[in-house]
Length: 78
Image (cartoon, rainbow, N blue to C red; front, side):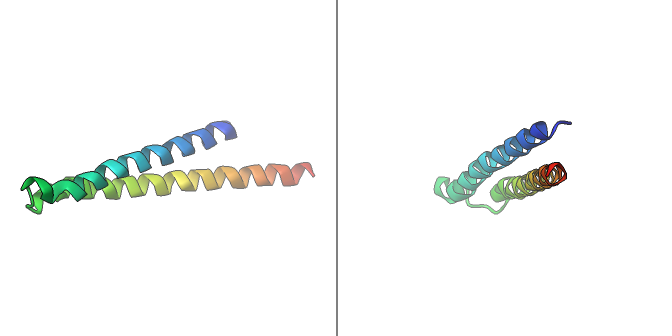
């Protein structure tokens, strides 16, 4: 995989994770407003929020690895 492809995929992964986290956070915030305050109604968005966190962390690690590869390549050229 090209480094620019890895950078692009990592950025897309971060954006997808953050967008999904916003949606899950909104579900959690509005859970009590619609008389559906049972804890079971929060399970799915809480699990989704955790998955979003993991996706952003994994994508950040890919971005960091690509950055380190670029730094190594530039160091070799100089």
